[in-house]
Every structure is written in structure tokens, then in C-alpha cells.
Length: 66
Image (cartoon, rainbow, N blue to C red; front, side, top):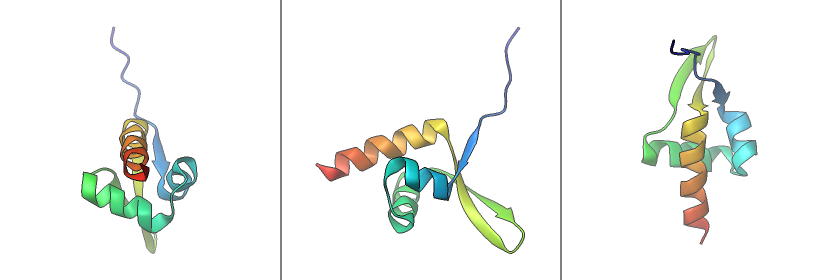
């Protein structure tokens, strides 16, 4: 029987902290790579990421730092 758990998501603030990026850098990588999705909540919206997307963002950020 397959286990169908919903994928955990990480908000953009936590993602930036985990990846050691500023919010503008995170948004730039997100836009360029096409990762993350906008989540509306009240007056503000934010970008959220799955752990797989964080892994891809981390690889891209590390490669650009070289």
C-alpha cells in the first residue's frame, strides 16, 4: 500500500535562513529556476517550497558561489 503523505512545505523566511540567503536572493533563485509556489494568506502572500525544491535551490546557490 502506497503511503500518500502530503509534502511538507517551508515558508520563504525559513528557506532563506536554511540556505543562508537573503530574501531577494531567494526570490531571484526561485524565479530563475521556477521553484516554489505563491501562497496567499490574509493581506500578505509568500512563496513556499517543498524539501525537494530546497535541495535544488541549495545546489544552485552553492554552484553560483564558486
